[in-house]
Length: 523
Ligand code: AMP
Ligand code: MG
Image (cartoon, protein in one colour):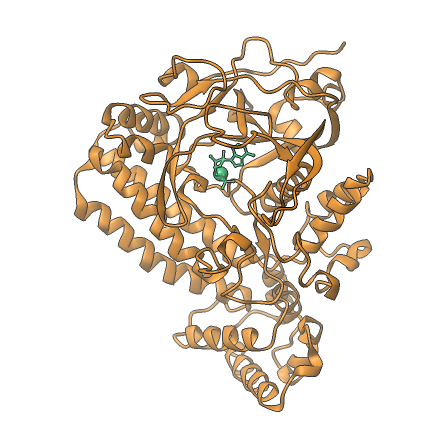
């Protein structure tokens, strides 16, 4: 049997306090950052896909990835020598309310490694019960595992900060789930995603110690995080803690601006799903905008209040940062300084959001009327049910001297062109006319503008129905589409001649289908 060696460098378990009890018995874990627990033994692991790029990052060869040992380690059946798997303790605000201890209920960290001057934590999602599993089973099903696997790698290639995925495996076990929470549970294939990030620490990892008034562990964890992941901020001190908070605030904003740019809606922006490194984390009932709509949320659990709708993501980022500020307060004790950082988030958001939208419509020289031009566009986009991805991509074809064919150029983006009223058509024509005038002030050529626009407006995203097609096929034993979409989404900004079929509006059958437009947290 071929074995592979990883460059193990455990920092979390060697520097932070452990829960003295081992095993998966459910419990409140106090004064500790994690609990040792082993992944569940599974029946018949089967490797469905591996990310070659992540293999390289971790120093694992392709031959090694085909070994029995790789499969066993990354599906949970075998613990690597010299490692001791563990689940992390954290709390969180869920849908605006403090939820107490949450923790890694269905994730188990294997180890950390250092390779090529990069540090990575390896984690299995769906590897069985932990002390934090509460009433659930610690498992994950194939459908949600495919969604996390494909989307996290797609986000990376879109240039959005994210956790990564290394492999996707079937466990061979069946898992019971009630997808729509309507009393119709069914067995589904169980699966495990091995995922990778420098750290999986969340806002909630800090909140739990503040809520328990355990400043000692809070300080230990904060000092560890700064030393390990933000060493440039300097030795821990009040100033450093503030700089730490500022850096997290800035990274969180950058991540959310990227989400807005590509039309990604996370779906569950609870504080336990907010990475301390500003990475997109925990791919659950997320979705991609098809029709551009600030009010859209993919998450059925959020259907009533739409707290996590597309247009509200920047506000929720700020709300979550308030919770983190409260959690770090005992170490900083300076309300005004924390408030100043939160205020900067707001003003930076206005600036960066405008810059991002300007780049999406190909405006690269400042003009004070751009905000109005963009707001008018957002209004008319929402009035017409317009596919976000197709609209912005096709807009790059417009010629400065000939904007009168604007509507024709973006025609393919309309979901229901027949429903276009005269009033709406006039609004569109009026917008294109103003846009044409504005383009006159841009000095770059049409070709240069198109090139730049195509670098921020993806041609291919993981549309909700695309993931669902891959899931439907996989549930029948056909994994080819997982590979096809995985490869397509490695180059989301490039024209891919053979893949034009994925540059298309969502088909009508997918409009109201479970998994395509509606997702639940049941994964
Ligand atoms: P999420 O909203 O998916 O990020 O999950 C919120 C909390 O529920 C986290 O503490 C998860 O670990 C836990 N959780 C979600 N699904 C399961 C499951 N199947 N088994 C155990 N814990 C779970
Ligand atoms: Mg989570």
